[in-house]
Image (cartoon, rainbow, N blue to C red):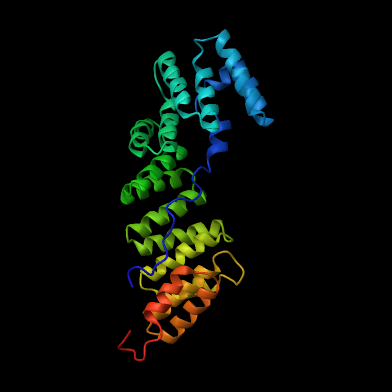
Length: 285
C-alpha cells in the first residue's frame, strides 16, 4: 500500500507576505526620505511603473542616497528583475555601510531564484540580528524545499510566535511535520490552520492525510466525509476514504469508495481498484 497515498504539495501560500513587505518599512530610512514618501504614495495608488520611473530619476539626482537603492530593489524583485535587484541591494549595503534589511531581500531574491542554500545564508544573518516574522517564514520555506524538515518546523514556529494567526506558516509547518512523519504534530497544526481558514479544503485534506498516516483511520474518514460532492477535493476525499476502509479491513467499502473516486476522475483510485479489488477471498488481499 506504500504508493497509494496522495502526495501533499510542498508549497502553499508561498508569497502571502509580499504586499505587506513592500509597503511596510522595516528600517527608519523610509521615514527620513521625502523621495521615498513620494514613491510610496504612487505604490498605494497601484502605479508601480510610475513609481519605478520616479525612483530612477531620484537616483540620477542623488546617486549616493542609499535608501533609494533599497526601495528600487524591492520594486525590481516584485517585477521579477532579480539580478538587477541584487545589484541595487549591494549598492545599498556599500553606501549604508551595513546591509541590515538588505540581507532579508537578498534572501528573498535567492529564494525566488530557487537557490535555497543562498537564501538560507542571507536570511540566517538577518534572523540572527532581528526577530522578523517574514524573514523566519522565508527561511523556513527554504529549508522546507531542501527537505530539512525539523529545521523548517523550528523556523516556521519562530514566525508563528511573532505572528500567531498567520495560516500560511501554520499550514506549512504542518506539512513539514507530515513529511517528517510527526503525524500527531501535523494533525494539531492542521487543526490550528483550519480554525483560521475553515473553508480551505487543502488544509482539511492535509489533516485527513495526517490522521490516515498516523493510523487514525476512523477519525481520518470523519474529516474526509466533511468534503462534499462538487467540491474541488471531493475525488481525493473519496479515494482516501477507500484507503482508510482498506486499513480497517472493510475491503468492500474500500472498493466502493475507490470506484466512486474513479467515476470522479481520480487516476490513483483506478490503479488501487485494479490492484486490490475483485479478489475472491480476504486472504488474496
